[in-house]
Length: 137
Image 1 (cartoon, rainbow, N blue to C red):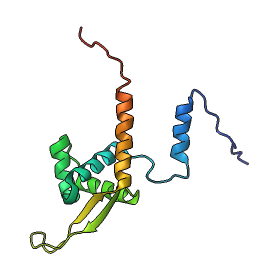
Image 2 (cartoon, helix red, strand yellow):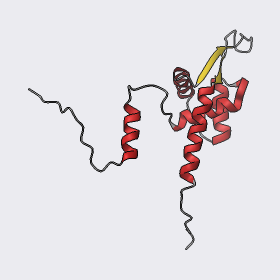
Image 3 (cartoon, rainbow, N blue to C red):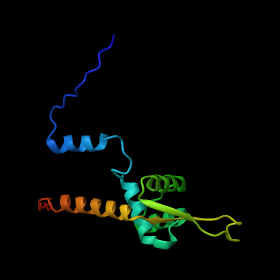
Image 4 (cartoon, rainbow, N blue to C red):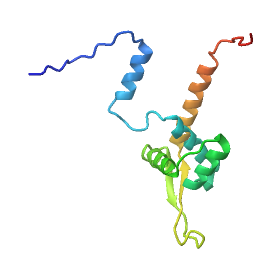
């Protein structure tokens, strides 16, 4: 018979880490945190505004950041952000140039903007705490 502990014992962990762990594990809710690629895609959808679709996000990613990302990764991130409620999407009209296929356009939601504001605030707060170091020899 295998015993399963009822309590998890944390050692060498401070209150901030514990709060973060609890926040991550609260019901495994989607939308609580975003990764770096998700943040960049969310920003680019906002920048592209009414012209944000998979290929335009991919091109803008390369132009703005120098990163080369696979289109499948872009589509996966766009779908994940939409599932989290940070983006919405609508199908555009069919065009002859695309062989009659339609584009899916993405729009930043108010929740998506709030998440971006929160991430920026956190990054700025941490950056402003960096000590002024002299790296010259």
